[in-house]
Image 1 (cartoon, rainbow, N blue to C red):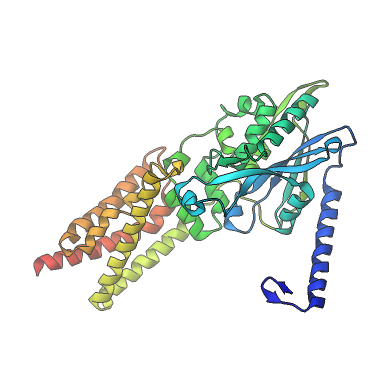
Image 2 (cartoon, rainbow, N blue to C red):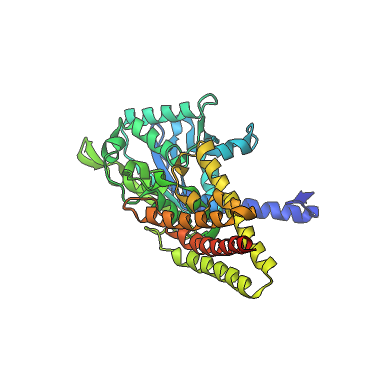
Length: 406
C-alpha cells in the first residue's frame, strides 16, 4: 500500500486514513454548526460564499460561489465558476495565448467548503433576500450554466472570471439591479491597485505582473469592474437596499464569517513596495560597477552583455505577449522601453554605442511617460530596472567607444 508515493505498512495506512476521516468529520461538523440553518422542506435559500486568500500565489485574489439550498429538490450545492482541466486539448498553448477554458460546476457544499477550511482560507456566507421568482430564476440560470454544453467559457483575468460570472448571474436573477447601481459608480481602486494589494507579499510574482500588465488596468473603471475581485462583490452587495413587502429591505439578509482563515486578509489599499525593488536594482547595479572597476574586463563586460541578453529577450517575450495573444490587459504597455529588444544590438560590437543610447533613452522615455497624469503605473518596475539598464548602458557605451578608438 502507498500513501503520497511512500510505502506504508497496512496498520499505519489504516491509522492515517482514520485520522483523515476524523479530521474531515470535525471540519464538516464545525462548519455545519456555524453555517446558516438549512431551510425547512418547501423553502429555499440562496447564499453568496466568499473565500479569503490562500497561501499559494494563484489563490491571492480569493474566490467565490453561489450556494443554493432547496430540500424539495435535494439541492445543497455550491455553483462555482473557477474550474479548469489540465487535460484539455492544447492546455499550455491556450494558457500562453490567453485562451484558457474554464468551466462551471455544482459541487456538494460540504465538500466544497471543506476544501477551503482545510486550506486555512476564510469562508464568508451572505444569505440573499430573494423573492420566490428571483430565486427560481437564479436557480434555473445556474442549473443551465453547469450543463456540459454550456459550462465552458473563455477566461479573462479581469473581465470574465469566476467572480464576474457570479456577479452576472446574480444581476440577471435580480433583473439588472447590480448593473443599475454599480455600472456608473466610480471605482474605489483601479484594477492595478487591486492586483497590487492582492500580490504584494510575493516578490517576483508581483514584479512579473507589474511588468506584464499595461495601461488597461490603470484606466478609470467602475465599481462593476472592480467586482472581478470576490471580496469587492461581497462588500458591494451589502450596500444594496430595495423596496420589499415590508418597506426598504437590504439584499443581504444575514452575513456571517463561518470560518476565520489562517491566511492574513488583503490590505485595503496597496502598500508602497518600491523601496525593496530600488534596493535590489541598486544592489545589482553596484555589483556591475564594482566588477567593471576591479574585475578583469572580460568578466565585467560579459556580465553587462549577459544582462543585455536577458533584458532584450524578455522584451521580445513581452512584445509577443502584447501583440500575439489575447491577453488584453497587457496592451498598450510602456515596459518594452525598459526591457528593450533593440538593446540586443549590443551583442554586435559595431552597434554597441547605438544600443547604449537606445537603452538610456528608453529609461528616460519610460520615466517621462509614467509621470504623465493618468499614465501607466511604473514605479516598482522603474525602481528595479532603471539602475540596471543605465549602468549596463554605460558599460556597453564604454565597450563601443573603446572599440572605435582601437
